[in-house]
Image (cartoon, rainbow, N blue to C red; front, side):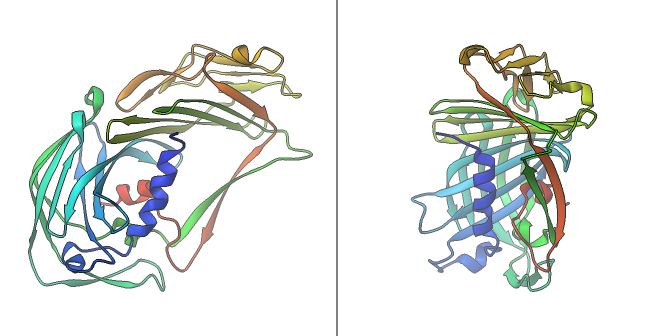
Length: 317
């Protein structure tokens, strides 16, 4: 079952941090091959492509991360598919989304690349370009990019900031905030909604994700943003709640704890994901829960990179 795939793939990216050069991987069975590049898509979307192969994978893999916005409000799509990944070549068929067929052409001697944070390490990177064809068109034409050449980059996580934002939730006695969760899942499709409001006059954070398996292609879409306090209302004993956020969401939904399970989370609430518009977020196919929770964010400093962020890596030019 697909569950929170974006988080899992972000964790996978930790394994890629040390693989920073196509040339350095040649002949090294313990590291495999790795290549990365950034592109500029239409409609203000940025694209980050990472291709890699390791002995544990039967085939190589390509990860295409498309997004705009960052931090408190963003929308993104992640495509994950099998690929032929060699030290000097990447071949990937992403079905209706497009294809990548490029070869690596070096442009100078290897360079030493340093991670941004103290004790982050030093790696060898061979500068050059990926040349060939890169043709990507997001579903419903939310973005597209067609280029024949792009500059190679080291692992984007080497430039991660020296710190991490810790996101947590606190429950228990005295907590007056609320968290609502609704989900619907099958073997090939999972929809997830989470709403947080720390008290009746606090702003509301809403995040939603859609994960799909389409043949050999896995797609994960996500949107998140903050909304005014009126977007989410709940009574003190948490018997009922109402949600009506603005774009990219539309419609409204209501939670009724004492209703039958199929009627606990009802309404016409929907969301427009990049590449997939008008996705329902309420109805009898969803299970839901409402509880007293407070959401916290805390920035913690470190002297070396911690868990990498695809959004942060994508934002860097």
